[in-house]
Image 1 (cartoon, rainbow over the protein chains, first blue to last red):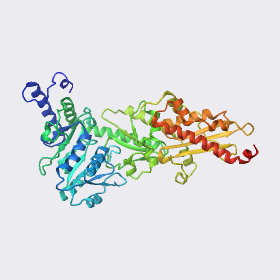
Image 2 (image 1 turned 60 degrees about the vertical axis):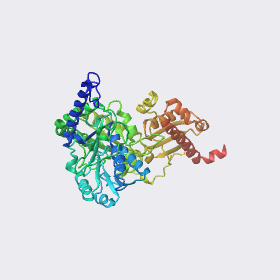
Image 3 (image 1 turned 60 degrees about the horizontal axis):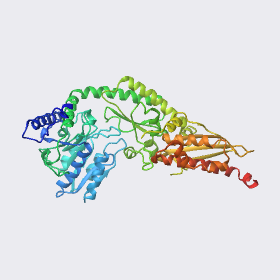
Image 4 (image 1 turned 120 degrees about the vertical axis):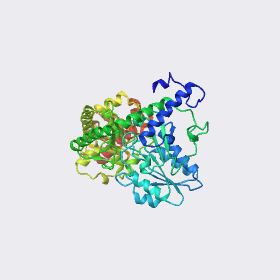
Amino acid sequence: MIPYFYQHPGNAASRNHPFGWEAESAVDHAREQIAKLLNVDDKEIIFTSGATESDNLAIKGVFEMYKSKGNHIITLTTEHKAVLDSCMRVESMGGEVTYLEVLSNGRVDLAALEAAIRPSTIMISIMWANNETGVIQPMKEIGDICAKHGVLFMSDATQAVGKIPTNPKEVGVHLMAFTGHKMYGPKGIGVLFVNRKNPRVKVTAQMDGGGHERGMRSGTLNVPGIVGMGKAAELAMHEMSADAEKVSKLRDRLEKAFMTNIEETYINGDVNNRMPHVTNISFKHVEGEGLMMTFNQEIGVSSGSACTSASLEPSYVLVALGLGDDLAHSSIRFSLGRFTTDEEIDYAIEAITKGVQHMRDLSPIWEMYKEGIDIESVQWSAH
Amino acid sequence: MAYSEKVLDHFKNPKNVGTLDKNSKTVGTGLVGAPECGDVMRLQIEVDEESGIIKDARFKTFGCGSAIASSSLATEWLKGKTLEEAESIDNMAIVEELALPPVKIHCSVLAEDAIKAAIKDYQSKNVDKLVNA
């Protein structure tokens, strides 16, 4: 990737000199590497700046392209903001969007999904795996419903690509968004897979310009980013299954230690349909952001609790799973990776167990809970 | 966003964590915030009956580092103060002392609310004394 910043600085769209050819051939190679990982045609790979742009392009682009056929889109309340906000934009452009609730395990209710389809429905957008809980959706079943009703299936697969097999054609996905940096590639580079045959899908470009990427995404290609993402895809092909096995073992060990060592600990989301590298855990009566502070000099995790004056709302994803606001505020998402070691897991278990103890010693609601006081019955002063 | 040294210190070594007997006539308890908001602060004061001075202060807080630091600092400030002096503790003084960023100002507001609630609780238990005084 690095040589494409300096030694090979050509523009992949410059067709008349060797610098351009060099860049073009590097892009072509990366496109093939990525297509191979997904088992799709390389002409179906559209480069963007990241998953957010890919989500925007897919949702608004389909809405604009297909509005003569209908104006209705179905999605889930637990989708990434890039999808939800794009859907809201579609609504402001005259579209209609159904935001379906999920089951308490985080998965889509297939019967409700099918029932939500209208004659005007043009697309269903459901993520492959959730970014907060790692819950994997029943992709094949959703794809079958889409095929049966002649509806396009778009999926934000940012969390899944490169970590588990994600073959869009196998499950009936027509558009798929993902990004480089979630698969060990660089930031600032993403892909939208757009199905070319049966059906031939088109999206209206969201940026006007030189008509790059088959007219769907104008703008000079980010050659170093593309080369890096291509290499990451190639590595993922080889490493994915070994990675998944190793990482899920570490994840399970981490989880088991918490469940054994720390009382009132809950795993959020469907543990049977989950990404191998993610776990989302609530430690009851411990506020997540505070807990993070006990170990965040050494361990990087994220919390479903955002304690800022602008937003006291806990994670909308966890709330959608039916967790009370208090358990949502008590949640921590752990994300492991290819480079996570056994020693790091040992360290995390010890540090976090201590951290939870520290926070519970400080927590008035933990004390009340231990005294047998029903937290629900307390008159709280909202603020 | 990085926390200030003072917040980190109060968070790691919180002062005056604990529980006083909430049924005691000399103890005032303030419980503010709500679990669903991600912040609950319980602040207690014990008042010397003779002098009317706060001789002990304890807290427990469910919340982020700034909320814990704000309540820890509040207990330090309360000790040795009269109720009147305690009543005048302003949230902005806490903001200044801990160098809280704007998004964490509500933590200091909560601490001020907790102080006021604790004083009010103590006073409601000792109405007779107020009348006599």
